[in-house]
Image 1 (cartoon, helix red, strand yellow):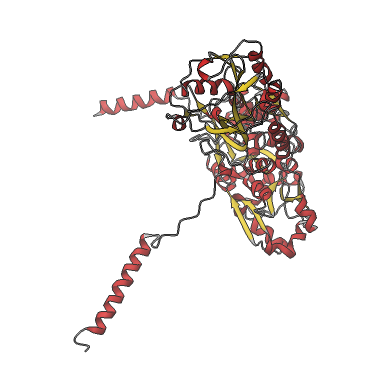
Image 2 (cartoon, rainbow, N blue to C red; image 1 turned 180 degrees about the vertical axis):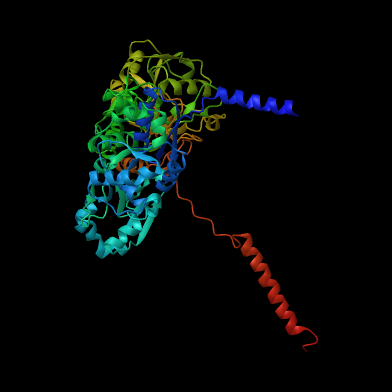
Length: 612
């Protein structure tokens, strides 16, 4: 027995010797962009100094992360001095230096240290749409008091539980109660802007460094009673971890005073509006400040829309450009010529793509499968198949041996292969570099028997080519004879009306796909949040719901996205709620059963023989 115990002791000692006993640095963040960006900066600077880390853990609320650092589950995270005060029940302080001195004094005995501030304050604010504020003559929070009962406000759930600077203390200080309070989760706090812009609420609780405030032209109501305290941002750490890693404090101190309010608002905008990941934005900012040696990630400015030249040059292209500039206020938008637009979005080199519905499908197999990672955010119009040949050269589909198409991966090259196979043609697709004019020129100079162009009805380039009456449009008859409609759900039958082009005296049967604006889709099952397709080099988030709705409001017409395509969540129809169950809980069911038995017993008492 002694020998056995000795073996166990020796094994335990050996395992302990293999472990140096120094745990990795645990960094925390709250579930909103600014906190994540600052946490990523702390992570990058710590790693630069060789501090071992275990990554970043998100916490849903301030009380949760505050409890975590007190009990040792988190070693360091970005916090605000005003928050530190209210979480200990202290009265707010409007002077930043005094607030910092006070929290250092209060938290020191707890073994917690506040390091030098980042250089900016992020205060709470109450925001409105500028047009609504002007219409109602509202300039301060006190101006809301007379009509508060008829107003709706959007707030994050964390704001509702804050004891001294949250929703209830705010309404008590100003002596008002809102008619409706719409609460959203902290990690989805951009929804407060969606609800504000959509008109679902009248006002919203915001952070003053949010990029959406300037992006959407919102106004902040004056806190005329000075209710909200100052919220200077500072690294908040356990004193023990600073002793364990003596290089950590100096590493983070290089950020002291380096982040201005305007810079922080810009960084937040890159995450919330441009869709960049907090890690990419943080490392890019640090590299630009020469605080880390590598890791800069270039952000896109202006906003880039990847598409094929013929789509960009079409009338719809101009409408889309204007709609994007309206939806992303203050941003310059421009097209980038690309034969594979969705891949360009996935690589982080474009924010949006203007594509046909077929771009969402992998066409390499006989039965196309819908690709993941992208979603349609707005329907623009229709992209129509134009199969054009020289009138005196070929007279039927069977005679066509070569078809000029756009570059490899382009809409016309992908559709051409489907048309050739679906109609049993023996033709071969011949890629031609350039736009519609270059593809059509292959027919004029005899390089190809026909040209397949994906474009809108009445396209100017097609109209110019057809003007001399030397060319003709081929009808794609017989598409529905086989299983094409089932195999290719994104290809719909269509007809080019008579006299759309010179010399076209009769309607022409053809095919069409929907032309849509597309962006990154949420990545399902991503434990660190929806950052777009996992394979992309620069992580992208989906287009925000508010931007999606602004896009759709700015594009003429009410065309819905083709049901064969993945749809942005904000465009999904709202389904009616099912009626509540008659017995929503086991307790209610048991109570109901007891009442039934009770009434049966009462009835028996009334009719029992002894009673009669």
